[in-house]
Structure formats: C-alpha cells, structure tokens
Length: 461
Image 1 (spheres, helix red, strand yellow):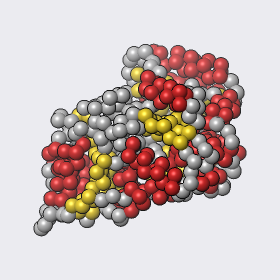
Image 2 (cartoon, rainbow, N blue to C red):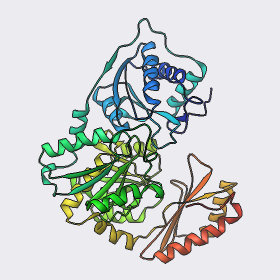
Image 3 (cartoon, rainbow, N blue to C red):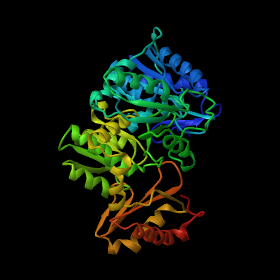
Image 4 (spheres, one colour):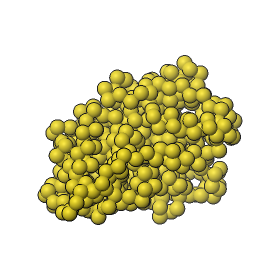
C-alpha cells in the first residue's frame, strides 16, 4: 500500500505546493469517489487563500469519477458533517487546515451519515491516491452549489429554548476564520425566537491573511485576544474558535480562560438537564471532576480515548448524549454524534441562565475540589521506556491503574495520566487532586524528576 506523509491519523494535512497541490486534490476526489462508491459527496472549504483552488480541483476529481458534488462554499467543518447527513450523501470532504500554520492546508473526510471513515477505508483512499487509481465514469458527475445553513441553524438551536435564555452579553472572537458568517446566522435565529442576547464581535470577518494570527485559542499567548476584550466589553461570557470552528474555547466574565475539564463538566450538566440519567463520555486525561459532576447530576460517566473517531465510536456504542475532550472538541448524539463549535456556547448560555451562576461561579467549586496541572509536555528520547519507568516507580503504590488512554495512575488523593501524543514526539502529563493544589504541584515535580533522564530537551508547558 502506498503511504503519503500528509495522511495523518484521522485527516490530511500538509504544506501547500509541497504536500498538497491541485493535482493532489483532484486525485483525492477520484480516489474518495471510488472507495466510498459515492453517487454524491458534499464539499466545503475554510477561509485560507489556497482553499478555493483546492476545493475546485477536488470537485473536478469527484466529478471525473461520475460523482455528484454538493458544494457549500465557505463553511465550517460541522456544516459539512450536517450537510452530508442532511442530503443523504455518501461522503463529505472539507478543505481546511484549522489552526495549522498559514502555509498549510488539508482535508477532513467523513462517510455516510457523517460517520468517521474506518481506518481501513481511509488508508484505502490513501493507497488509491498514491497509486493513481480511481473510478471509470461514462459521464461526469453533476455540480451544484447548495445552502442548507437555515436547516443547520434549526438543528443547532434545537439544543436550547431561546426564549428562556437570560439577557446575557456574549463576546465572540471569530479569529478571522470561517466562524463569522455562521455565528451571524445562529444569532439571527436566536433573536427570531425571542432570545435577549447581546453579541460583541471581534476579529469577525473571514480573512485569509489572518491579521490577528492563526486562530488557535488553545495557545496561552493567543488567549488575551479573547480574554481582554471580554472583560473590557463587560460581557458575561467569551468564546473563541479555531479556523474551521469545530473547537470552541471559553472565557469567564473576568476574561480568564476556562480549562477544558471544567468546560466539559458544565456542558455535561446542561445536557443532563435536557436528558436525565444519560451517559456522558469524557477522555481519560483529567477525569475526577467530570465523573463527580456527572454522577451528582444523575448521569453515568464513561471514560474513553481522545481522538474524534474513537470518541464518536464509543458514544455510538454507549448511546451517550454528549462527549467532551480537554482539547475543546464537544460531541453530541443529536448532531450525528459529531463535534460542534456552535452548540457548546448555546448550552453554556442556557446553563448560566438556568443556574443563575456565572461561568466563573460554576467553575470555582470545581477548581477548588479538583485542582489540576493543565497539560504538560515532555520531549523524550524513548517514550515507551519513560512510561515504563513511571509505572515501575509509582505503580506499586497506586490504588488503580488504567490504560484506556495512555497510563493513568490513581491514588487516594491524586491522579496522573501520561500519554503519548498522536502527532508529535511528546509525552503529555496531566495531574489532578482532591482539594489540594499544592499536592498537584508536588506530584508534577515528582514525575518530572522521574522523566528527567529520558528527556530529549527540557519539558515545555
């Protein structure tokens, strides 16, 4: 089987002009049409300067294989997911590099019903592309520009009751990515249903030059771009998205960034208010706070592996209504089990409205009861030996050892998760504790010392 370096674990990413060319996009269209046995495929694109040409070449490749193309134009990844299901297409492909450097681009693919492609099928598309094999067609497929945003907005708004929302003020940072136009449509839908929402917009217009920098709110250096204007505007809540807005990030009214584990817990509360006693999937990196909150709210926590294909598969198997990752991916059963960057902020508004508590207040108890370290990265020369050493040194005293995703060690008052990165030569450490931030710091120092002999360079936060 041919291998191409731009084919990653779940999607395609690479440098434009080197890894990704119009010829590559054309070949991908032919290969995907053949492997999916597709009569119709939905396509869309993000705001990057290279995306229109790559999208056009992708469409030509699909059509050359006799596959009809339904083109959404500029949109978010979740809109391609929605349209793939809405139009009952056999697949969906969006041209996007999300938060990658400005010279990059990529493709995300899904199958019928917006389900992730099985790895074998994804690799078969890679092999067809590498070998130049496609599908013979007696006539080219059709092309149609489509707009199902109104139906998408209706689905997104179905997660809340707009007329019951409190008169809240939202600061929204679109990052000059694809989020702006879709946000406008969602806000218009809210207002039409009586929501007394005020929205202050920042970096709103899509701009391929990304004048405020590549939108990646996970990076600490980028967080003041949302935190400061949230505070200055006197907003109740701040939200920021990455380039294709499949991830969203939250800031409380003081402008403070809210770590992912607390966001997952608050959204779990909101979903359990809608669907009592439901199952909630969470990743293994930081677990105790989410498990406590879910059980208190009457739900059932289910721990799984990070990664969108793995999370979606586990949610489907469990019938879970919601799944959340620390990385700001949030998945919903009633949104084809897909991740959305628009549904979470609506649910956050609903939770604030129903509880009467600000996001800061909701998280204060969580932070006190379950302080955590945040994710700490270690660049190591031999990850397997490093993890084995941590297990050998700490495992005998652990009350629980779990390998759902990396190595998780539980003790009476603290817990650690150490896992290999899916995309980089890094070990990622998260430590959490019960009611004791000093204990978190002490155990981070302890594990750092164990890992020191394996370090390729100093650990980086």
